[in-house]
Length: 465
Image (cartoon, rainbow, N blue to C red; front, side, top):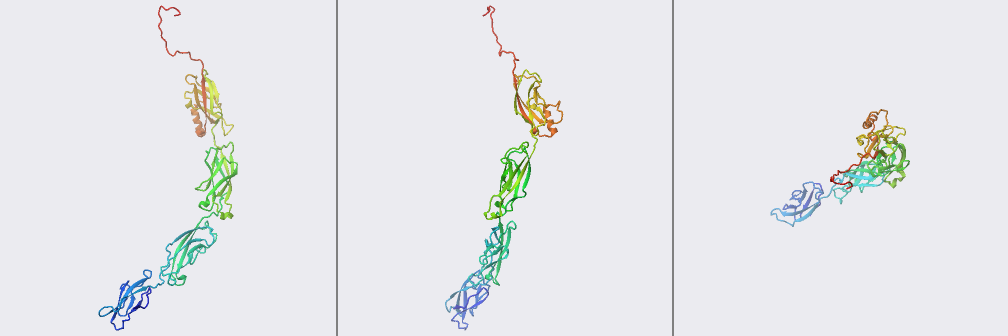
């Protein structure tokens, strides 16, 4: 028994014939095996095998069947059972598919032409050993002229030089895979590729202007930020990180500049205290440079820039300063009321000719033993002193810039607050000095026995006993 030919994927028939079949109708054909009756049937009279369904090679490429010729009258075999294999011959009925698509890829900007970006792969379920049904070629439908694709390998490459991220940072490509080696009639599939240009350091930094000016109060604490300056850099991430330094100027040692790693600004900070009366302005020349230099793009540099920073020191109304913050004075406890104890002196650091007003902090002289001349700073006694009661007086003196108000008949404490309110001055702008007044002793106390003594005397006692 022999099978004349194989089946294709289409619904076809093939003939099976036995040598004992003389065409007299005494033989019938029986079919068993994979797909018998469900997929394949046999004409018991002629031996023709029919496929009742459309075959799909990608589901099953081979079927093993057994056929036998039997006597039609007694159903006995007229020859042994024969086994044969039906091979489903492929046709081009599957388009290429990108199983890993859509794709995302990254490539550095300014990459040379031909730089590999990503490899796309399409698979075709048809038989790769039969014809060209599974032979795929690649082409680019969208994304030209910036990118190309290798027809045989699917490698996507850059096609233009000097692609600049700062001009455009993302591209959407459409790649096609077509079987039958791309010939007419072939089936095709597509996928998308999103290409992102990553940054390289190809843009030098520069200041937005060549000179800056800032005003700072002379009372600013040390370590405070006095100014912020920022450079412009079109690059991103590490390629836009900056370093700053003071190149020269008259504020070396007084100011320092460091980068803010979050904003990449240059922070100018104060290293020592300012004094408007000593120097009212400073000029610095500041340099900004990229922290990470790409040697490939040195010709686009220099990757640094300089600017001038002028810092104007603003005058702050400072409190008067005592010539001696701590003064020591002596006064006899015999001194009469109104006796001069000593004189304090303070000056206004903002103005050499500004008059000063003095007052006593009465919290330190509750019993008002002393007075002070508001204009001259002369301290005098206001009450009799007693060394044996209080030998040392610790007094705080206020010094304030003078105003045109009359202070007569005002207590020193009230004087202080009235002056502050009238002149709208922060109490912190009031100078303070400390006076230690020692009361010296005089012989103003007769001796006193510590205890009383008692004794007995006989009436007969003689003188001298």
